[in-house]
Length: 401
Image 1 (tube, one colour):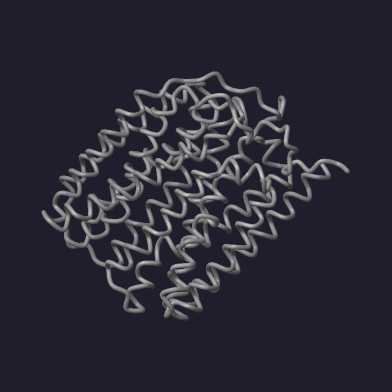
Image 2: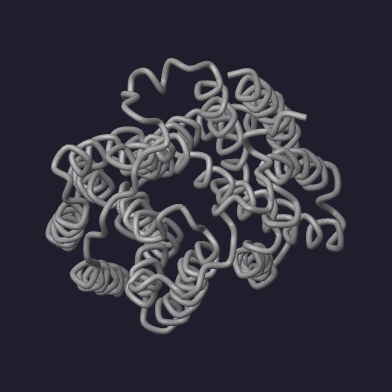
C-alpha cells in the first residue's frame, strides 16, 4: 500500500521525540507570551477606548475592521522581506520597534481619521510578528515539531493572563490607562525579539521549487481555500461571540469565563500535541478538527439557551483552533521550508486570518442584521463543512502527485 503523505509512518521525524528542547526554548516562549498577549489585550479593549473618545458604532466597526484588512497585506510584505534578506530576526526586530514607535500616536489621536491612520500603521507592523516568530522557531526545530505545542502554548497563556490583568486594571483605574498597558506590552515584544537569534534554515523538501510553482499546485490551492473558509467561520466567534452571549442574557463574568474555557482547552491541546499527532496522524486530525468545527457551530447556533451546550462547545476550541492551527503549521512547513519558510507562514496568515477574517466579518455583520444572531453560526457551520471538503480534496490530490 502506498504511504499517504500526511499519514507518515512511525519513523517520520516530524513528531518524534527529540533528545532535548530547542536551544532557544525560553526565548521563544517569552516572545510568544507577549506577542499573543498583545493580540488579546488590544482588540479586546480598544473598541471601548474608541467609544470613550467619542467614536460612533459605525466608526468603531470600521476601525476594528482595519485590523483584519492589514492582516492581508502585512504578513505578505514582512514575510517576503524576511526571506529575501535571509534575516528574519532583523525584520522581526524592525517591526517590533516600528509598532512601538507608531503606537505613541494613539496618545494624541482625537478624530476618526487620525485613529484610522494609527490603526493601519500599528497593524501593518504587528500583523506578521507571530508568523515571523513561528518561522524562526520552526527553523531551529529542523522539522521536529515535538515541542512546538509546548512552546506555542505560552502565547495562549500570555493571552489569558494579560487580558485578565488588563481588565482588572482598567476597571480599577479607567480606560485612559489602556494605551500605557499596550505600549508596555509592545516594549516587551521588542525586548523579547532582541533575544531571538537566527538559526540555520533547513533544506526544503520542495527542492528548487519556486513560490509561484507551489502556489499553482491544486493541492496547495485547496489547502489555502480550506484554511480561508475555516478562519472565516471562526470570525463568528472572534467578532460576535461576546455580543451573541449578551443577546441571550449571559453576564459579563460568564462571557469572560466562556472565553477562558476556550483558551484553556487550546492550552491543554498544545501541551499534549506531540503524542496526539503521533497516535492519530496529521491528515486525520486535520479533517477531524474541521468536522468538529461543524458540530461546534451548530451547537452554538441552536443551543445558546443551554449553558451546558455552550460549555461543551467552548471545550471543543482545543480541536477547532489548537489542532487545526498545529496541523496547518506542519503542512506549511513541509511545502515552504528553507528559504521560503517565512513567506509560507506569512501567506497562511494573510489568506486565512486576513482574507478569511475580513470576508467572514463582513458576511456575518450583514447576516446578523438580516436574519438574526443565530444565523451567523449556522452559516459558520456551512463554511466549516466547505473547509472540510477542500481539505479532503487537497489530501487526495497529494496522494496522486
